[in-house]
Amino acid sequence: ARLGLASHSSQAFIVALGWRTFTLTGSARSLGVVLTFQGVGVLATVLVGGALADRADRRTMMLVSDAARFVVIAALAVIDASGHLSIGSLAAIALVEGLATGFFTPALGGLIPLVVEEPGLGSANALIGIARQSSFLIGPTIASLLYGFAGSTVVFGLNAASYLVSFAFVF
Image 1 (cartoon, rainbow, N blue to C red):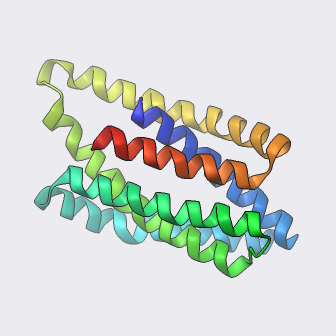
Image 2: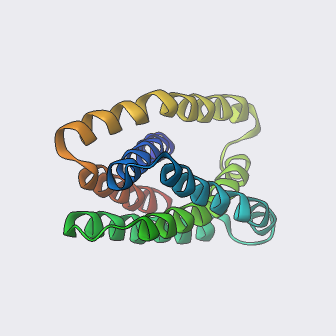
């Protein structure tokens, strides 16, 4: 449940982030820059996160990552609601979200074999794969509906809340 919620919410976030960047700037270049910052954040930390997950407590890594993502995305929702959103703040928030995600992902991947017994590992990995793949369809659908009816602040706020839910499941 935690993985499904977080995956769907993360995909909704990426779509809303892109739309909000474009509606703020009217520039496809700005859209590319912000999404690149998010991707660079993930790439910059995923290998370090993988090595750290092999040596440190994975649960703690997941909790810190979820807390960081909650804080930064909640800040985005507040800044967006206040009308003070800028391309710089979007890029910085996208980078920090990517950095935190880069630590979370390998911690989660390394945790599964520790909490699922060997006979159930194949099924667990299949369910994780289904959750991740379905998020590519469901997340953007959620984002488009929420963004269209309620705006970007609501999408960002719900994404921040999903990290609190994730934090509670991991805790």
